Length: 414
Picture 1 (cartoon, one colour):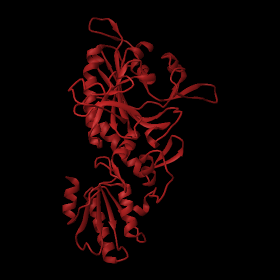
Picture 2 (cartoon, helix red, strand yellow):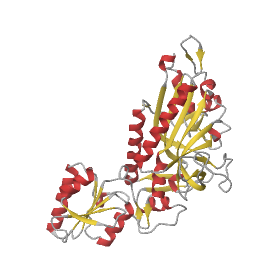
Picture 3 (cartoon, one colour):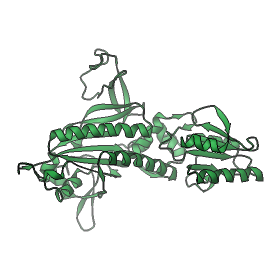
Picture 4 (cartoon, helix red, strand yellow):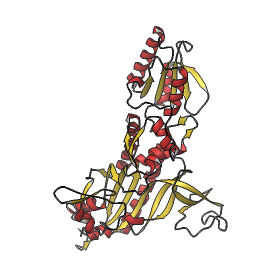
C-alpha cells in the first residue's frame, strides 16, 4: 500500500481522550469516532481486526467448533421467552414502522438455542460447538476509553451443547487452552484467568481473561508468582492480611481490561426454549450449554494500552496492519525513487505486507514520526546514504542495521 493512497492519515494533534489507546488509535489513523461509543474502523484498523479474527477462527476450528452467522436483529418474543426483555439493562430496543419490536443483539443465546432446536435430535448430535464473529450492541450508560467500551463493538461468541455437566466441563477446559493460545498469538504475554460473577447474562459464575493495565475497569486481586487471580468483587481475600491460597506468595491488587469470558449456562436456555435430545436410554434431556466470548475490537484497544511508548503504538507482529513500513527519503532523486520502487515491488512479490511512504514533500522527521506513531514492527529506510543497502530497524528498539533486501525478507518471514 502506498501511503499517499491510504485512506485515513495520521494527525499531528487530536483532542485529549480518556485513554491512551483512544488517543493513539485516533491520531495514527486506525479509528474515527462518529458518536459516543460508535466508531469507524479505518483501513489500518480494519486490517488489525481482520488478523485478530483470523487467529480466533484458526484456534476455534482446531477444537472442532463450526462457524456460522446469526442476525443482529432479534424478535422481542425470543427475549421474552428467556425473561430477559425487561431484565437486561443494556439491551437496545427498537420498533419497526409496522409495530414489531426487536432487540439489537448484545449476545446470542436467544437465537442460537432455537436454531439448534431445529436440528438437534439425539445424543449422537452432541457435543456441538458453534461460533460466529460479528457486531454486538449494548446501551452503555457511559461509553468511554474509545473502543474498549463502546455501544457497538466486535465480538466472537462460541456456544457449546453437551449431554451432561462432565461433557461441558471437559470442553470448558479445552476452550481455556484455546483462548490462551489466541491471546498469546495476539501479543498478550500475561493473561490472568479470574473468577467473576456472571452478571445480567447468567446467574452462574464465570471466568474472565484479563490483562493488567492502569486503563482497566476490572479490579483484580492476584498472585505475583503463580496463576491465582480473582475479581475483587467476589473475593474474600485481603492482600494486607492474606497470602496466595495456591503458593503462599504475596497478593496484589491492580486494574485490568477484560478481553474474554466464559460462562457455564447449565440448562437455563435449553429449558426456556424446550430444547431437548433423546439420550442413550431413550429419555428426553435438556443439553447443558456453555458460552465463550472474546471482544475482538476490545483486543485492539487493550494491546495499544499495554504496547506503546511516548512516540506511538508498538504492534505485535501477528496483528500489525503491515509487516514492514518502507520509508523513501530523497525521492526527488530519480535513482533513489527507482530503487524504492524496485524494493517495494519485490517485497510485494515476496508476499511481504508493506506500507510504502512515497510522499516526496514530507520531511524525514515527519516520515519517521508517522512510522513510530503507526507502530508497524519493522521500519525500512532507503535514501542516498543507504546506497544499495536498506536501513533496517525494529519498532521499539534503537539499533539500526544496513542489510540487503534478501536478508530483510528472510528476517521478516522468519
